[in-house]
Image 1: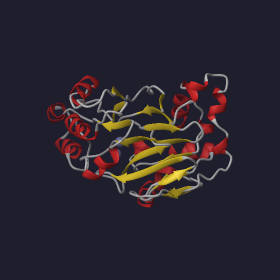
Image 2: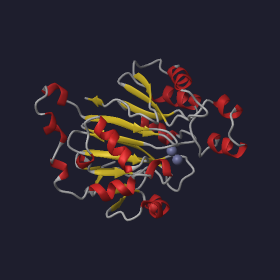
Image 3: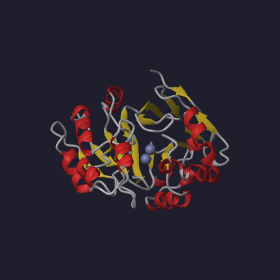
Length: 288
Ligand SMILES: [Zn+2]
Ligand SMILES: [Zn+2]
């Protein structure tokens, strides 16, 4: 499907660019198609930075604006260089900082119209909102972004792939089940950010009230370690470089359990497996 162009509103942002900040470094360090940093992941806030060196976006901004700025700065990144914020769904852990950042840095916010309706009262005054449709790819400068529907208890939740010059990454968190459509989108990626929310035994035997346990386990809840493992089994391939497990529950999971369960899926690739955490941003990863 040919992506439609949705202009990111500022004509100058697309050419400012981060690559110039690295002009004194080796060219080989600049030779990447995409760089990615998970700023935070979990039920207290989610944000992923994605850039091709010229165009930079946040996918979700679910921490306070100041905390997102602090975490970007800790990696030598600057919110002034962002071109847009893309929103997956209206839950607070994905939009808490969207309004503030968009106002402070004059950023357009991309989300579906149903998500906009559900989120608008929480965002405050956002100057430019651009609507995408799940299933229809769009481009921001050279980044091609393909939102796809996921099964989650929000109005119109979406996962995303981002593609630049043939390098593709996917973000799939906040989904109760992995549909065949989700699996199709996750194929052929160099990097996967994949939900591994809970260990099923820890959830069942844990402290949450039964209705919340049911919500998390349900078709519109969150993927367990085991479901994540089964999904990865189907979408792994020998060019997959990174799998980052995300949206881990701090009550019903541990990084060790997630890594060991999902790691058992990886029979056909040598991808680096890691977990994203709530309180610290992850490494800045570059993909060619
Ligand atoms: Zn969430
Ligand atoms: Zn959610």
